[in-house]
Image 1 (cartoon, helix red, strand yellow):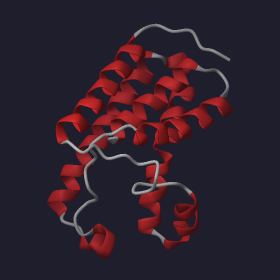
Image 2 (image 1 turned 90 degrees about the horizontal axis):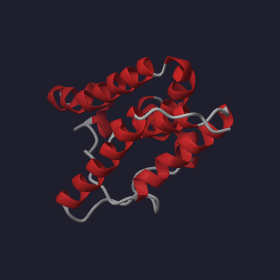
Image 3 (image 1 turned 90 degrees about the vertical axis):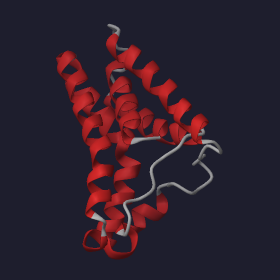
Image 4 (image 1 turned 180 degrees about the vertical axis):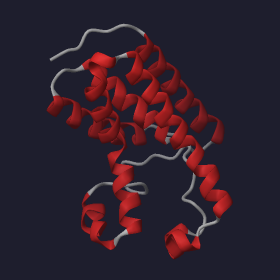
Amino acid sequence: MITTIHLLIGALIGKSFKSIWLIIILALVSHYILDFIPHTSPHEVEGYLHGGLNGVSNRDLILKSIEPILGLILVGYFIYLNKEKALLMAVGAFFAWCPDLIVYFAWLDTRWNLLDKIVPRHGNFLYNEAKSLIVGILTQAIVFITTLIFLILPRKGIN
């Protein structure tokens, strides 16, 4: 799934539960559940895997940075609307995004390689890329809209 969806689901988990440990676990698990749903994801930034930041296409880097930035802004907006749950929502969003961040940091610095090998990542049995672009986009749109609805609705936290 795209970064925005992982962030929003994590924020929703943070909004829905009171236990920080439960939020962390559910947010991490949600990442893999979402990646198991057939979807279309953008490919890595051109040239990054082989040349690091020095080898990237600047145009591709800028274009692929827009979506996560918009996702962070959207999550920030929902956190602003739910100030009493701000920390829990931020923790949920962070840990729902965490598996992708680990992959990114492993590309930046080899000290993260061990963790990158332990954490399931794209291309493994948990990742399910849609066979059709339309199906891949449609599944993400359904998850996105449903998550927005639940984030907008007032909700009391569960243990």
